[in-house]
Length: 91
Image (cartoon, rainbow, N blue to C red; front, top):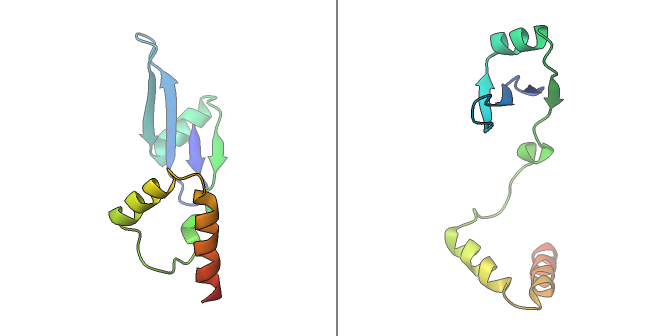
């Protein structure tokens, strides 16, 4: 059982007793209460802080992603990215 402390969404997982495949399900507040009340351990987690950060700059496009993928094929990709970031910060 996992419950997000930020929005109280819950989910639980188990192995199917017949096929042993993992199964994951969303859980309403009622289901969370029933499962925890019957002894299921609950793990509380938080949404990543990055979700609340202010986003600036242009939106990433599929072309940007392709350009980045191609850049990663070069041995000096990290230095090129670092230089681009420095130029962005300096401007």
